[in-house]
Length: 307
Image (tube, rainbow, N blue to C red; front, side, top):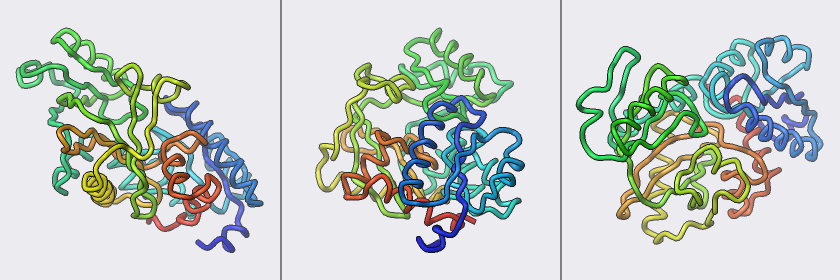
């Protein structure tokens, strides 16, 4: 969709929603809405509730900028609704959104594409902790299969903590992912329309990039560009593009890695990265010479290319 075409459309910025990431989504949506209005576009904010179809009709929405995070927004559900309503939308399509939200499925696809990811095991709803899970080395990382923003994630250093972590994760999802803990440099690579952006190193002061570290000012240091060799930088950017493509993602994507002994391990692919003025994707884009407004407009221009 060209800038000229966008200028003729009524744009609905979908934010808030029903997930545990609602507050973060409201901040992302507010920043995007401000940028679009500053670009003189006809944009309206919608707090996406269960009456979203009626909200979209009432607003006369012709294009949707999805600023939702987590369930019922990042997982393919809203994308499917928008397709039923024939409203073009930003970001990845239904299948890619669903796959990327599912940490277990996405890890399997990453491995098939030749992208390294920490060793893992899966606990289904009916499973007790098995020998293969409770044995071996600690610490282990326990995650709900389908959540974002590190919600429900714990690091278990003992069998007792592992049990507690599984119980906590099951409050978010019946399926639980148990990963080997990999110590190293945490980095994130933004991918915009198939092109990798500069790499950011993430250094949480508490040692773990959890929800508090992500969204509390001063709790995390961001180093841009990440202090990596040119060769490792190029390899991480290549892997980020491959990872996004392996899951079928398009538009703006953020791929998180841990680098141990110069070996990247992919942690997660995010199909709707945070878009506040201080979020990681805008930081990387700004370093590459793209303003927040231009980034928002670039993402919006991709609406409808995800089907």
